[in-house]
Image (cartoon, rainbow, N blue to C red; front, side):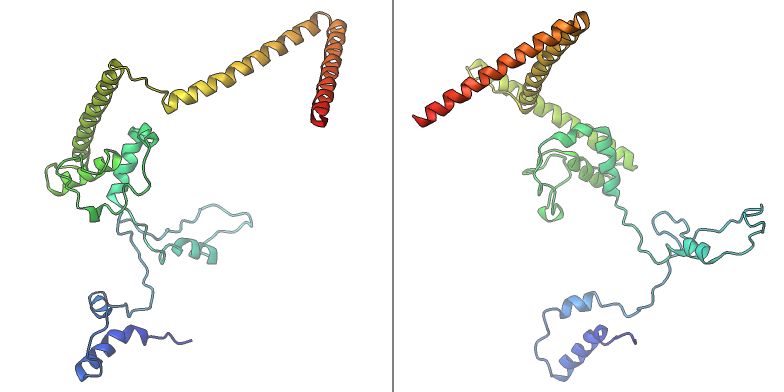
Length: 268
């Protein structure tokens, strides 16, 4: 089937219509298509080298000098070798951003920053908010790892630092200084509130630890009872089994009596 190329000529046809007077007003999309015209080359061109790393994307075929399983020497590439060597030529190149490398480095060095509560739309559409990254702390945005990343890029673009790691270290030290100031302010505010009679509740971590300790205490009691039963059985197996049987019978009788009482209460 022949490739249909009429749609890509929409800009030329519309321009001719405007010049000849067929159209009086240009369409809404006219300026956009004129700025970013559609591609007219439909043949895929192989990308021999990776534009990011500069390495070749063609796997060179290397044959072994020895004899294969069939007792023959391999001197030429088969269809499988050819496809495996050139299967990456027409694939799109992976997008690599400098910000992603800085984010990965920051959160590898500061894993506990991920545990801080965060709003999902906190770091979205940052370019449209017109933040001034001449300072790391911004109005309306909490201090986090993204602040370090954007501050590092600002220092690098404005040539205030000669290297990427130098800009990252400077932004990281500014992050530490402001974070320490925030922690000191929170501690002073808490002490002042306690001095005036405020009672602080449990934090989320303390609440979780308390619930965990309750489960551990119940588990400890259960384990102690089980170990006592095992030690009693080892000391005198016959008596321990008989006692356990009598205790279980008494429990069953008590449960039956309780069920009868509940039924009588319901009937009344």
